[in-house]
Image 1 (cartoon, one colour):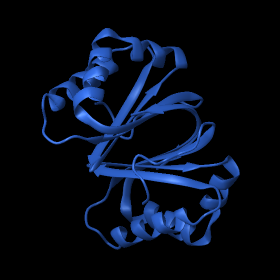
Image 2 (tube, each protein chain N blue to C red):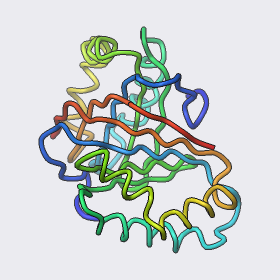
Image 3 (cartoon, chains in turn orange, green):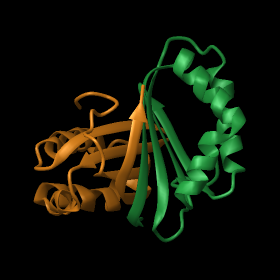
Image 4 (cartoon, rainbow over the protein chains, first blue to last red):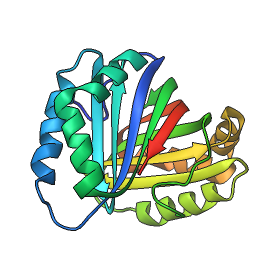
Amino acid sequence: MGTVPANTPKPPYYAVIFTSLRTEGDDGYGEMAERMVALASQQPGFLGVESAREGVGITVSYWQSLEAIAAWKANLEHREAQKLGRERWYSAFRVRICKVEREYGL
Amino acid sequence: MGTVPANTPKPPYYAVIFTSLRTEGDDGYGEMAERMVALASQQPGFLGVESAREGVGITVSYWQSLEAIAAWKANLEHREAQKLGRERWYSAFRVRICKVEREYGL
């Protein structure tokens, strides 16, 4: 998964906040989740990802541009995962596309 | 903590993504974390919060405006918590201020 917190560049760049509640049981979810992180990491414009689940799951991926996010959303293998996510794995989710305007840290 | 995923309005609005790694031991952290969520929820312009820790901690709070975020950052009790966070509780953190441009979900 790379560095955590993700070692993102100077803003502006983009973030996708994916917040979800899971259905019961694994049903192939764990394997697919790992595969999607690995696949996302190979996409053009990918900058990093941070993920935690504690009841609610929050995955934030960082991208160079909205075009990079759109290309990742349209990736065929990712589209299949999105379909299974809606059908099987998530009882609720929210995807938020954001422009990161400022960043600081320790 | 209200609804999860947070029941945010139609974009645009703002998100603060707070990603952190904790030091060892509680040392007052748990109580302060709860207090800060309760206090944030009372601030003008607060829209919701989502939080999970699994090794890395990710807390995303949602706000109506950059002014609301700046006012929350300047809140005196919150400033004391920020100071303790830097000194005691976090080995690393990153704060990202974002404009949410698009949102969809299930």
